[in-house]
Amino acid sequence: MGEVIAVRALVKKYGALTAVDSISLSVPEGCCFGLLGPNGAGKTTTIEMLEGILKPTSGHISLFGQPASKALYRRVGIQFQHTALPDYLTVTETLRLFASLYEQPTPISELVALCSLGEFIRQDVRKLSGGQRQRMLLALALINDPDLVFLDEPTTGLDPQARHNFWDLIGTIKAQGKTIVLTTHYMDEAQTLCDDIAILDQGKIVARGAPGDLLAEHFAGVLVQIPIANLAGHTVDMPFVACHDRIEIRTEQVDNTLQKLMAQGIPLAGMQIKSANLDDLFLKLTGHALRG
Amino acid sequence: MLAVFRARNSEFFRDRSTLTWNILFPFLLLLGFYYIFSQAQPMYKVGVLSVQDGYISRPVFMAVKHIQFIPYDDLDTGLAPLARHQIDLVIDIDRAKYWVNEESRKGYMAEQLLAVKDPNFQRRVIRGDAIRYVDWVLPGIIGMNIMFSALFGVGYAIVRYRKNGVLKRLNATPLTALEFIFGQLLSRILMVVIVGLVLFLGARLLLSTLMLGRLGWLVLTMLIGALALVSLGLLVAARLRSEEFTGGLLNMTTWPMLGLSEVWFSLEGAPHLVQQISQLMPLTHLVQAMRAIMLEGAGFMAISDHLAILALMAVVFLALGAATFSWDADGR
Image 1 (cartoon, each protein chain N blue to C red):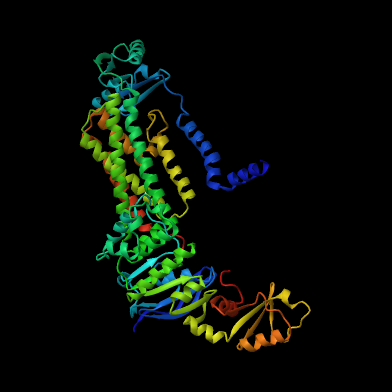
Image 2 (cartoon, rainbow over the protein chains, first blue to last red):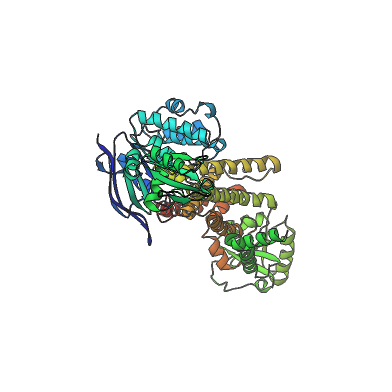
């Protein structure tokens, strides 16, 4: 598989502020690549440089094995994080408008079927619900049948059902062999959709790899959480971290840990056992919460 | 209630464009009108013909106070406003003749004064009804409508599109800036000309307003005038992101034109400097050309100067607007 995106030493500065600080990465063909990070980490700035919307201060961007150029951007589809559409147009008129800007657009009927736009095709775009709007914006991103699709926080603000519907849609697009670059601050989204992720903090990549590999690399075992109230009159004879109204014990041998706790007479009511997720990974790597 | 009162006051004082609009602008308007009308308005207006610069054999009549003497290069140019009651008398100093419109009451009074001061002047008579104010003001109102619609329709729309991300979305397509600009401008020109024609036809139907010229020249004038004004709108909005600031700037552009482009009142009698400034404004040329077509039956040659100036303005505004246009002008 060839590299669809290759970035070397990419920098973006706004005056004294360095929004993106010399990042390098590559995305192979057919991959769903996730760019994660808290608000202000530089995700949108990075993705907009990759999309050709923003000019980098320095660094090199290659698309489809060639230096990024206007012609290559015609093979790219973009769904922006914040975007408005011309007022007073219906969904079908908006699709027609954008289709007319490309030489060989995807047939509108195909997009309508793919993104399930049929129910509201004649509706004014201003009156769409959050989920409908995101599906329409995705249809616009696919209107030129792109090989590479950028999705900048596509499910932010959607209810859980709409998010899951959108994930199914992204899965369909991925199955068509398109390369996807996705920014999100929903970790479950990244874990579900992405083959490969980069975690960005303060403009730098702090972790890079497949979600499962990264978690395996940084976390061994599971986290046992016990309510602090259960500890009254007892001593915990193992390392733990106090956290709000509970203690957290990290262990690779759950059975042994639970037996020890029971042996010490500590009640296990309200106990939770969880595996580390990307939130925990981010917390560990950067010292602050992912959604900060 | 006190909390709402305080919050509303803070909102008012912190919104700089509203503050400027509410306080500074009325003062500027007041000062502008004070300057325009600083000269005492004359009781009579008399056109003067003479090949001698400086009126060497100046008639005694010209020493009478409260009469404004307006020089004309030739007789036809002088007689046209006389026929429409816009001036009260025309005198030819070199040939010692005068023309009076017998339908005009003020003309009669001015003639009596002339007869007392310079009885040797020979009388010539012309006739013509006064132009109704509604006939006179209609081209001004059409012009004003074209101006507001063109400037705000293009300027505001572009800035709103830039602010809410429509331009950014379009920039991610193969659409070029020039294609976008021309699409916007042509759409708005078509709309303002249609609305202008609806106004013209509606007024003609309802009030039987005057139309002495050809409709084709009127449409051509509207098209070129609208082009100049939408191009000005593009220039104002080429790089701005703030709707408030754009609103202020567009108001600063439109209101002086509204005051100085003879939309509501003639600038005859205004200081020379004001008249010169007026000639720098596209609306002046649009209104004057439409007025010449509708009230005087002017043909292409008679309005060609106005059209040429409007076309030149359009080219300059368009070139500057297109050169400075930015999809996302926030320094990124």
